[in-house]
Length: 273
Image (cartoon, rainbow, N blue to C red; front, side, top):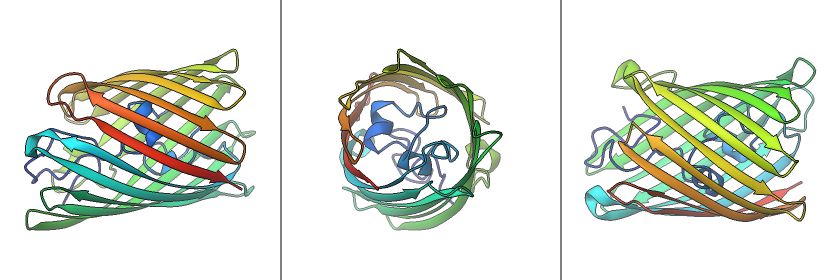
């Protein structure tokens, strides 16, 4: 079965090009350093507890595209997500992404999360479930998997989080599972830093960080970097957008610092209710 974290191991571009979780503009802008952030629809793909603290309803959709150097091609992804965390009992959401590969491959993924706030709304717990179906070069397979995470507000400006990914494993067993830890600190209400560490059970580690400026007028600027030991490359990310009370427009990009270069771009529109 295909790994929930990377493109299928059997594919010719296996373990060489991209992490399939990172395609929404905020995730590209932050280079996937998402473990300790209060996120919205991104919680479908990263820490499933990260939207528990948001208390809103949002729907977004967008498109992403990136180069796949090992096959001299590209991937195009279309996605839509809906999230509702206004309930006092549980919050949750559902997301759908469809990806096509220029060499003839295609895949689609359906994801859902459910989360809960506890301990005076300081601790969020969440479970995410995903179903992935892919077809590449005549090979077809699918994967049912799950993630578990927590997000703890140490103070109003300091957050720690953790996520266990790919709990059910796949055809490659325990080696495709990983655990991520993150810390986020906010300064002066508009400037924040993120530090992330992800350990795969093959004893390979991803680590990275991000800086984000979010001004009162809704302007968002993000810079990030990551060393991905899974894919054997380093990358940088950048994002720009407007985050308003009713609508947000975000563009994100990420590119490998070391060859092969695999520029990725993404744009989304999000509406809040």
